Image (cartoon, rainbow, N blue to C red; front, side, top):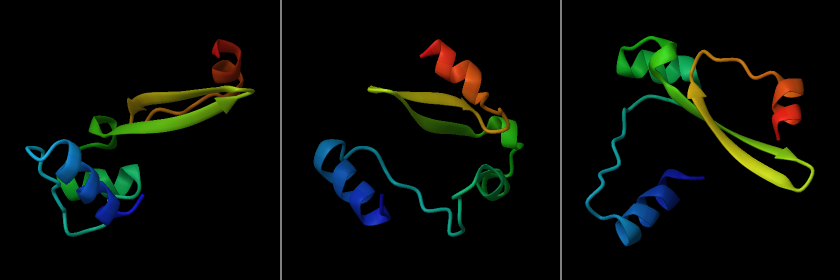
Length: 75
């Protein structure tokens, strides 16, 4: 997803929400935490999981690790 597509989406669907550019990369949890001056645990990350025909989005803290086996069993 590009920055331009995100800006276009919000402009069309939620013009009251501003997109904030940090001026540095926030592609990883560590980069985002450094850019915002917080600990990695304070960053929320979203994981997209597919198990068979099921797709789930999991939102967790930035320093959390995913157990593939436990996620597969839960889904």
